[in-house]
Length: 213
Image (cartoon, rainbow, N blue to C red; front, side):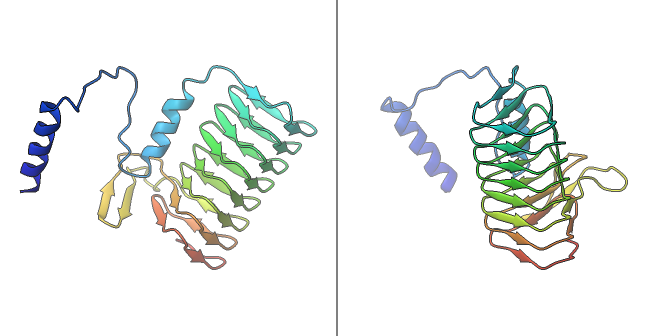
C-alpha cells in the first residue's frame, strides 16, 4: 500500500511538471551508515591540490607539513607536530606538542587535541576535546565530546577480516578492513579507554575510566 501511494505521488508530481531530472557526472555517496562519512570525506579531500593556512594561525617551533594541509583562523599548533595532508584543522582549535595528524583527518572548530596524539582518517565535528596520548583512527566523533587521556580506537580485527558493525537494526557487514569507532554528540569518556573495531556510542553516553568497549 505504501509503495503504491508513493508511485501515485510521483506520477502526480511528474504530470504537473513539478519534478525535473538532472544528470550528475561527478562522485556520489549515499549516506546510509556512519562510515559513509569517511568515504565522502576522502572523496572531497582527494580534490585538494594545495595547502591553505590562515594568516592568523600559529605554528610554534618546528611543525612539519606535508601535502594539502588546510588550517583555519586562530589555530595553534605546538612544536613537534606533524601534519600530513590532506587534512583540515578548524578555527580556534589547538593541537598539542608532538602530535601526528595524518591524511584524511578533519578536526572541527574549537577543538583540542592533547599532546602526543595520533589522528588518522577521522572526522571530528567540533567542538571536541581529545585527551593526550590518544589514537583516533578511521572514526567519526560528534560534537561536544570529551575523551580522557590514552583513548585508543582499535581499527581492525586481529585477523584483518572485514569489520562488522552492530547497529540498532542489527549487525551490518561494512566491507571495510579498517574501521574505528563512532561517537555521537555530547559523549564523555574517561581515561585509558579502548574501543573495538566498529564500536558505536550513542549521543549522551558517559563511560567511566579504564573501560574496554
